[in-house]
Length: 86
Ligand SMILES: [Zn+2]
Image 1 (cartoon, protein in one colour):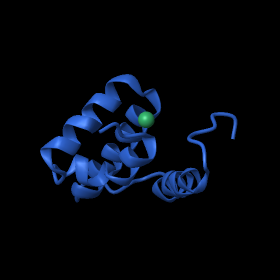
Image 2 (cartoon, rainbow, N blue to C red):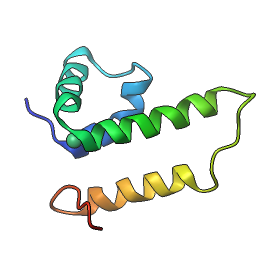
Image 3 (cartoon, rainbow, N blue to C red):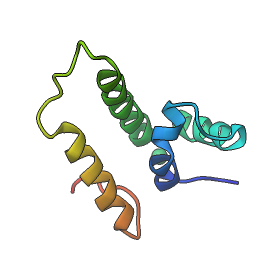
């Protein structure tokens, strides 16, 4: 099974929370090794999750997570992956 960027984004929250099955996790790990976009999305999402989990730090840039998720939703609707010029 080969997964693409859209699969990674769909499972990224579960991946961060260690809530994906081992086979899928291995596929995501392998994808992340070769995909800068997904690595960046993972880093951004992980930062948001860490901030949300820490009661002492709740100073997210306004609209940060909404923008990220809006971007992901928009990309998921396209027939062909990520367009860096968009
Ligand atoms: Zn990717």
